[in-house]
Length: 264
Image 1 (cartoon, rainbow, N blue to C red):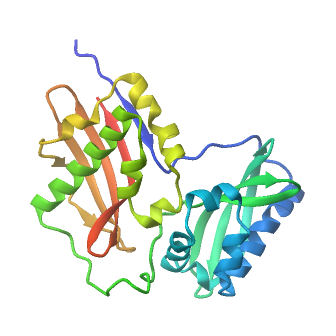
Image 2 (image 1 turned 90 degrees about the vertical axis):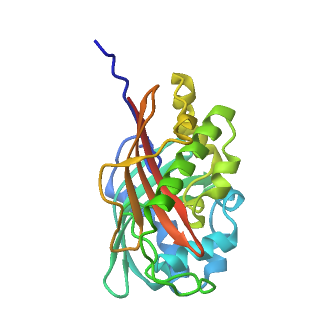
């Protein structure tokens, strides 16, 4: 009987820290988030960036931060609604949604770290995946279309191979440099290592996708936010690699914005 191996990790998964607690603590930990987004909504992006935790500024440049805020329309911030909070020691997370001036609601998770007596934002994650109502100011206005099949094949193959190379070498810096600038504002090199380290421990080698033509289980498609989705598999001799890939268009190329891979 053939033994089936199945292992999956999604890069946008989050770690729940501690237990959800009272509304009073929600309000207390939400205070720095509300101040932060008020600054963003008032157009004071530099002050908002300066208010974040040191770990955030270390992993995210102001230019990346600015592109993320403008690209997702967060400079049109109107209000926020936080539904839960969790924490452990000096780290925490609040979950809820941001409402923009046009009524758009964006689900949001915010990680925080306590520096001294002050809670500061250490990471921002748009959990609904909404991206780019507006393009960065320096990006040419172009019509986004689905690339031809041979280009789609190469895009998928390169993404999985590059991740596999990072896993095998235990060095995620080259992979990080190739992903979308928007995604770079949401994730760090260390977090990529933490997420995918189990692949190396289990002996999964994604580089075998190199040179293998993928089979798309669903027709490649653009969603309403202009994100490109590629879902399919690489049927290699050793194993079958299943993938779900998401791309954000950053002129002149499609850049990886999310990846979910399984092996069986």
